[in-house]
Every structure is written in structure tokens, then in C-alpha cells.
Length: 436
Image (cartoon, rainbow, N blue to C red; front, side, top):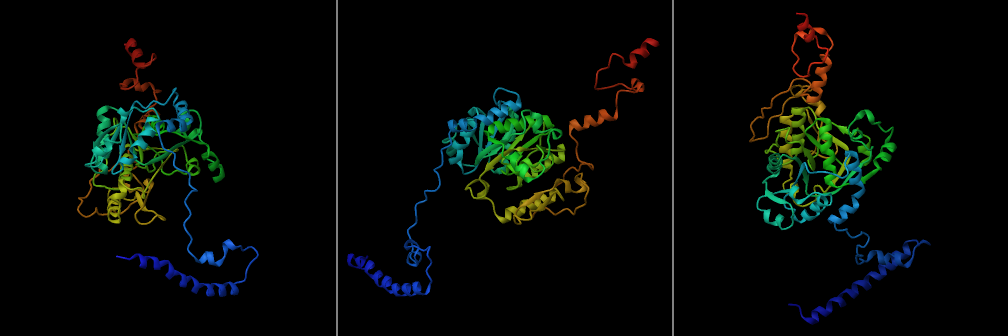
């Protein structure tokens, strides 16, 4: 144990070192030419000696997210969405909001504040959490809590819960920071009809259009996506995959063959039975997008809704299970199931991929031939029903094509019974009956 005398000797021992440095510092100051702009505060002595750290007072303190603050910040944005939908206020009564979460019960109150501020009752909030975490979440949540297990198990449980309640399924991450909408008109048509959209002439014009945005609640965003699902006749909808408004405004309002990021999904579970592949611990949203494109012919990605989330450095969630081995396992399974549809990302390293559905193999309805990659070790080969060239068409496009091919004009159609439309007043079969 150190004595008081030895403790008192410590500051005395530093004095010779300081005095020993003075001649060298004086010599350096003689060698180094001085400048008129130098001052005593910027001398070599102060630069060489360690300085105490200044308190970090530059950053503003975080404003707590509450139901009231969300209501105030998103009041104008939600009113705009209601106007686009043709209603007095945003109505999300047909949706079940499922938050997929693991190890982040401290975020629960903030996430629910964004939903409650949008007018959503707690009965429409469902938390799907990891095994053994139910008590922690129930202590911080107003919505109901169930243990879903792993990531894809929780996602599939959310699909089942929404289907049982006969509601649309909203799946969102537990680390949403902000949700915005780029204004592009006062009608729902402006948000999905390419005929009413004009591409910006350059990047400057796109940035100007993207700057016309307003913050909205996740409730309003999901309600708009749900309406776009019906308008475009798809079953899976999502937001723009990043928060760059200029890049989003430079694209069409809705695109039907691009990746839907899993942080914010709206799924019409009453019209699809597709499920998440539970062999994947990562990149399950890539696979689920490919399933919808392969089975239903398209998706609904809104490029006017921007959502910002915490990624990678946020403790909990997929961060706890993300490593190179699992990333490569997921990528290999994607290549095996969807040959040609995925490529390695050019700038983000070997663990990231690009979704290129238009480059898929001919067996998936594409135009190119690709060698199919073997499945990861321990997984049996995946047998997927192959669609004919061109892929599965949507129901709307099928009937549009049929009505064009069989116009009700020639009188010979009287001899063939018409199944779908009711007979017109001047139908030939009536005339034939009277003449006989």
C-alpha cells in the first residue's frame, strides 16, 4: 500500500521532466520561424502538452419522443396523407402493426409513441420478441407481446396473427427514427400512375422535388401503402430503401420489380400464402421479395415514402447474429433459389448483394441462362415451381389482355356461351330465338 509520503512525492517527480523539456522547447522555438498570426494560446508548448478534453456541448440534447411530440411534428404530414386517401383523417383500422424485435425493449416506448401519435389504438400493436424476453417487453409496452422465436419465425407468426384477425399485416423494425413523404399531388393516382409523372430533367431538379417532403407517422405511411396495394393489384408493399429524397424523386412513384426492404412492409395476407424462409437468419427480405415477384408477378415499392432506421451499429436485433459465415450462408441460399437474380455489391463488400430480377434465369421467366449454385452445406436442394417465360401475370393484367383479345363485336360469339359479362340488350341469341 502506498504511503502518504510516497504519494506526495509524485508531483515533485514530474518537475524535473518539465524543466528538462524547457531547453529543447526553447531551442525548437528558435529554429522554427514565427509567424505574425501566431499567438500565445497557439504556442508550441501548449500544442505539445496534453490538454484537458473540452466538454461536448456542441450537440443538442435529444428531445424525448412522446405521443404528444409525434402528434405535433406529424400533424401536417398526416393531414396530407388523409387528403391523398380522400378521408378526413388517416384510418388504419384494417391493419395490424407487428414490430419484430429482439433485445431492444428499451426502444419499445419510443416506437409505440410513433404509433399512438398516429391515432393507432394499443389493440392493433403486436410485439414479436425473442425467446425469454416477454416479461421485459410487457413492462415497457402497451401493445400485446408474443414470443416469436427467431427472425423468420417471428415474421411468419405475424402473418398468421394478421390472417387470423382478417387484417393487413404491417411488419416494421424496432429502431425507426423518422418517416417522411415526398409530396407529388393530392390524389392517390399521383402516387402510382406513371402516366401522370414526369421524370426530372437532371439531378438538381430531382433534389428540388425531393426537398418538398414532410414528416408523417408510420400509421399514415402504412395506410398509404395499403391503399397502393389495392390500386396496383399487388400483395407486398414497402418504402424506398434509403432516406435520400433526391434519389427517390428521380424514380417513378411506384416500381414493381425492385427490392422491398424488410424494415417496413405491408402485406395483404388475405390474398397470399407466401411465407418467410426460416432457414435464413439474414437477408430474408430479399428472398421474400423474390417469392412475390415469382408467384404474383410484382410488388409495390413506393418511392415517395422514406423511412430512416438504425442499422448495423444498433445493439440487438440482427446485429447480434450478423457475421461473415451467416452472411455467406444466406447469399449462397439466395443464389441457389434464384439463379441470376442476385449479384455481389460492387462497393459494399462481399456480404452485400444487389437484387437484379430482370437478370434472372430462364427457368424463372427471365431471358438469360445461369448455372445454378449448390445449396449451402446441410440444406437440401430447393425445389421451386418454375414459371413459364415472362413470369406469372397479375389478375388485372390477365383480364386486360383477355378483353383485348376477345372483343364482344363479332356476331359469331352468339353461338358460344359467354361466362363472365351479362348479355347486352341487343344480343344475338335473343334474335335467333325469335326467328326460329
